[in-house]
Length: 224
Image (cartoon, rainbow, N blue to C red; front, side, top):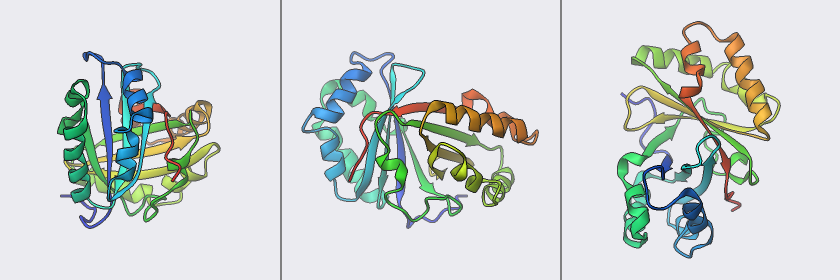
């Protein structure tokens, strides 16, 4: 059972993987930034609050498109329009399961903001996407309570080099949280993660392995 309400903003992380595709990431980013059917269409779509692409820091085949919408309905309308206008080489990247749909948690530092600092962060800003998959709702709720304290997300937000941090609940995946944070430089992120790994309780340690995270750099900030 989801703990977020269905009447709030909808947020998505769209993973684009060209490791087995005829095109490549650079072609995708160039299309997004410069083609008249690229980001200008997404950012002009009714209900869109922001959309920003990221290049994976460790895999040259992968990019992420992070977007926020006033609700799922206008997002669905845009997704259908995107299918109608996208070139053939991009269509395999439009599959529904490539997008993780989320809603922002009430304990998130950027709750009820549509233009947090993260969304206008400059080119090259480091983004960390941290996935938390719990075995049951009790474990999930326990982490939620921790994140709501001064030692939780508030500590992340005040850490040196942090631009912003947001926390979400996956809509289509049970008992999954996602933290998306932006950092001035990769070294700040590394220092932060070390602090968390050094201080985390034993039951939290499995969530701080590299396999639970993905890092990217902003390829085109949304400056609206």
